[in-house]
Amino acid sequence: MKDSSENVIYVGKSKNLKNRVRSYFTGTPADLKTIDLVKKITDFDYILTKTEEQALILESNLIKKYKPKYNISLKDDKQYPFIKVTIKESFPKVFVTRQVTKDGSRYFGPYTDVKALKRTIRLMEWIFPLRTCKRIITEGEPAFEKSCINFQLGKCPAPCIGQISKEDYKRIVSNAVNFLSGRNKIVIEDLKKEMNEKSTQMKYEAAAGIRDKILNIQKLNRSRNMFFADDKNRDVIGIYKEDKKAAVSVLKILSGKLLNKEIYTLDNVEGRSLPELLEAFLAQYYSLKLENLPYNVLLQLKPEGFDFLNQVLKRKLIIPKRGDKQSLISIARENAFNYVEEQKLKYLRKSNRTIFPIKELKDKLNLKKLPRKMICLDISTIQGTDTVSSLVFFENGKPKKKNYRHFIIKTVEGQDDYASLAETLERYLKKLEEQERPDLIVIDGGKGQLNAAHNILTIMKYDEIEMISLAKRQEEIFIPGRKDSIILPKSSSALRMLIKLRDESHRFAITFHRKRRSSRTLTSELDKIKGIGFATKFALLQEFGSIENIKKATIQDLTQIKGIGKDTASLILNNLR
Image (tube, rainbow, N blue to C red; front, side, top):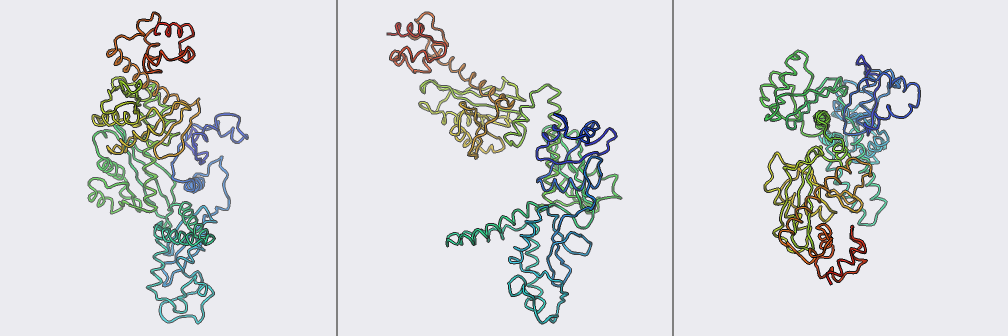
C-alpha cells in the first residue's frame, strides 16, 4: 500500500486478496494505527505467487527492503534455514544452516516449514547416506582408523576410513542434489512401491512409516522457495497476449531475492505471435541497459532473432524447462495474464458491461479464463415428439441474439435428452467460427446431460472450451470430473446470470417448439373449447401427451397445471367427454 508520494507504507499477504483489501475499508478498524494507515492509502500494487510459502518469503523480503511505517519489523533479521551441500570438498557433507556464504557450496531453500525440513534431513540420511561430521577428509590414504556410529547404523558410507571410493561417493551426492532440486519422482515411486508391498504383507505400521516419508518429501518441496545464493541480480520475464491486448511481467531478483515486479503493456499486437512480441520487448527494454545487465534473463519462451539478441545481450538469455527457475517463469507469466484480464475488466466497466457476475463466476468455479462468451443448450419435446433444441449466446453477460441457433433433432427417436444434446452440440461445433467460439458452455440439466455433452466436446477436440451444467431443482452447478456439485448463494450475481442464461435458452426452445407443433397440428379438439388459449392447450399437451390421456384425467389432475382452476378443468373434461 502506498501514500500520495508513492512511498510504500504497508506490505501484507493474503490467500483472498479481495477480502483482505476490503476489510480495511469496511466496518470499524481494530486499532488507531489501522485507522491512520487507511487515511493515507492512495494506491496499492500486488504480486501473485504460486504458494503461501512463497508469499511469506516475498513479504519478508519486501518489508526488509522498504521498511514500511505500518509494518512490524523484526530486529534480529532472522534467516530461514537452507540445506547446504559442500560440493567443493573431496567428500561433501550435508547439513542445515541459516548462513549463506560464497564458499562454492550448493544451497537449497529457504524453507518455511522447519519441522518438515528436519524430518526430511533425517530421511535423507537413510536414502542418500552422506557424512554429516566435521572431519576433514581428503582423497588418498584413510585419515582415520575408526568411524563414528553412523557407519554402523547405515547412515554414512564412512569415507573417513576408506570404505567408499570418491567416485561412488560423488554418485550419492549427485542423487541427493537431484532430489533437493526437485527431481525426486523416482525416489517417491520407489517408496510407493515399497509401501504397497508392506501393505500387501499386512505390515501396516511399516507401510504407514513409508507413507509419512513420502508426505514429508512432498511437503518439503512445497515449502521450498526460490533463492539464489550467489547474490546476483536476475530478471524473470513472462508474457501473455489475448485478442488486441498483451503485457509483459518482469520479476526483479535482486541479490538473490525476489523483490519487485514490473508490468509493461504492448501496443499494435494484433496478428503478432508471442515470439515476435518478446523480441520487440527485449530489444527496447535492454537497449539502454547494455552496460548494466543482470547476471541472467530467464525467458518464458524463445523469442524471434534469439541468436542475435543473445549475442547483443552478452549471452544472458536463458529459457528454463523445469525446476525452480521454471516455477519463477510461471509466476511471471501469471502476473502478465492477470494484468491483461484486469485491463479487459476496466474496458468492460467503462462500456457498462455486466462484467462483475462474469468475474465472480470465474473465481467461484475456478475457470481458466473469464467466460465473456457463453452459450446454453436446452431440449424441448412433448412425449418424444417434435423434439427441438435451442442455443442462446451471451457476450459479456448480455444476450447476443444474432448468434442464437435452434435445431430440429434428426437422429434421435423418442425422448432421449442425452442423445439430443449430443447431436445439437456436434452439429454446432462442426459449423463453429473462430470469432463465435464460446469460453463456456452451459448445459440445462444434471450430471447425465453434462457427461453426454462433454463427451462430444472431447471427441471433437475442443478441450480449451470449458463446460458446466445447471440443474433446476436446487440450482446445482456440476463440473466435469468433479464428484460434488457447487451451490452458489441465491444472492450471488453469478448464479443470477446463469439462471437468466438458462431461462432464456428454455424460452427460446419452447417458442420454437410451439411454432413447430402449431404448424404441424393446426387444430385439435382443444381448439374447439371456448376460453382455452394456446398457452393452456400447450401446457395440457406437454403434461399429458395426448387428448386421450387428458380425457382420462380427473379435475384434480388438471388443476395441478398452472392457470387451470376447477371451473376451467370441468369445462375441458365436459367438452372432451
